[in-house]
Image (tube, rainbow, N blue to C red; front, side):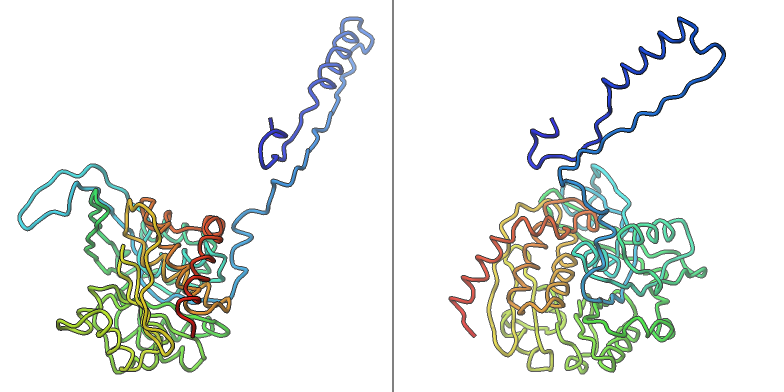
Length: 376
């Protein structure tokens, strides 16, 4: 069977015929009492038929790419599956619950690692059972964890997620230990930033800590990708290489009735080098010096959209760090986000390099079409 499968599978072949022959011979000798009280032991070695389906463990392959630092939140996600998002005053019955490691910092770190990036996470966990479980999960996903502190004064952060049948979701967060991620911790692990290509930041941590990390990145020539989940000081936009809000985040950063293009233009003229607005099933919009253009979403049927933004940003950072042009990296990030929404959960749904490579031909075809239509 192993020879008939495609690809042919490497397999251990047990020498059953030789084993039976040897056992029969030994039994005859015992019956004829040729050995007396003497004990006999026979060893027959199995044979490995190597048909090239064996590879090193995935954890050994991960971490071979360029160095990326993630500074962000680490949570225990409590996902509640519901028929629809509850309205004000409404009580509904859940169809299931799951407890999974999460938080944008941890999610992005795992996403980078799954795509073979060398990733370090700086964050804070409670010194509790949830914290230890999450830490073990990060280690198993080949995330470098030396920048993580266990805080005995706070619980591990929590995120309570309603996941509806139409794949919509709402999130309520309890920051817990994330709130204590401060400048002193950034200083303690400032050596981690040495030689990094990118730093991924999300504002589920104190704004002052994020701003201090951005300043440090500028000192060390590390490019910054910011996910602005809440308002921040727009005066530091010129220190941010990529700002990646979704449409709701864009609207609270730039209030008013303007279009996505107009508000992205305001962030760009305000100092951001690259503005990428993620638009869910409508894809995303890029504004920078060369481009002001929309990218359509990858054509996948959504099951759970919770981790799409983390999948997008993780892939964007990895492929940019490998020297891809921005539009090329966006196409790969778009497919990474698309794959993630076809699975439940966040970290478990983040695609690895092998899954993304399945769609490499499709992605490259989209890239070729893009440059034919929009040459620089």
